[in-house]
Length: 157
Picture 1 (cartoon, rainbow, N blue to C red):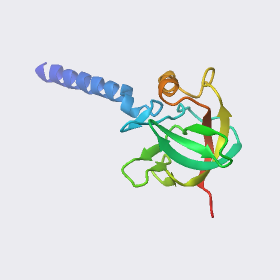
Picture 2: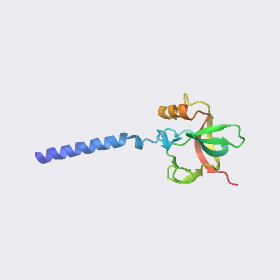
Picture 3: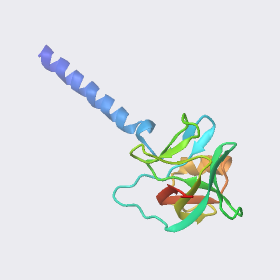
Picture 4: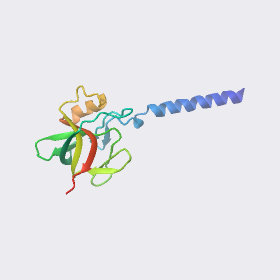
């Protein structure tokens, strides 16, 4: 009986540990990522395919204050990109690089880039962005925003 009780207790502790790991914010790619003081907002992760906008914008990725932003090629608009769910930023690199979900470097800060997606002036009513991301952006990086689609690449010279 003692062995059965110890086994049950060990199994229960293992299940509790697994539940905490599954609920940890570290496994949730929808929360804003911060690199130092820099905010790197991402879209919600969804099961299956996500709907994406298909407009194109050319511009230069730059950092100012708390925000990574895109200055469009015409110089008329500064967008705050909201990246796909599993993208990240290699802030240790010089210059920092945006990485895809597989960890491949796509574009660097300071580069002229091409992004697909679409422009939104406010995140109110946008279901693809979690509330904590919206709150962080509203206070630290006001729009307009560019909801980044599937194309993220440097502009070839």
